[in-house]
Length: 184
Image 1 (cartoon, rainbow, N blue to C red):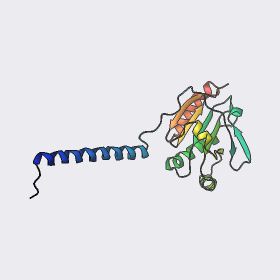
Image 2: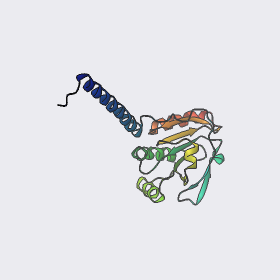
Image 3: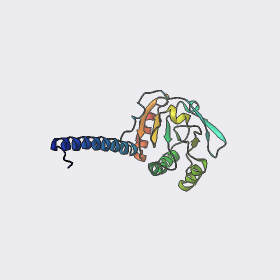
Image 4: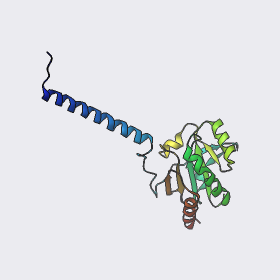
């Protein structure tokens, strides 16, 4: 007869529960990270950012961040597969159309597939400059690990405000106006 001791059964059950509990916590943390609950902190206000020069899709030209110094610059990092990015791009487009480029520069940066980018630009009727970060160097330099991520630079080239997640048209207009107060 194969009898087990009740205390041994209790120890075995307790051990299994502990293992199941650890597995559950690991899985929960993994799902939470994928869902964006552990997002990195945005770029701090006042931080200096790296200069970059990237090709502008459809324009046959490049855009240099250094050439835009002296006015506020809004930079939005996005991708065509990102639902929140699709949600905010029309608002960014409206802000772009509302401001003369010599007063405020509005830029978008993506490292997405060129065909997908072109399709989305056409679908959303975007005229805002779309810069192509082919190798992802600018994304890495700005610490982009989640999108959408946006940065508003003051006229001095330092971070005035950063946004992790969707930025609204009202929020962007308010912050651009505040950034322009310090602009020459």
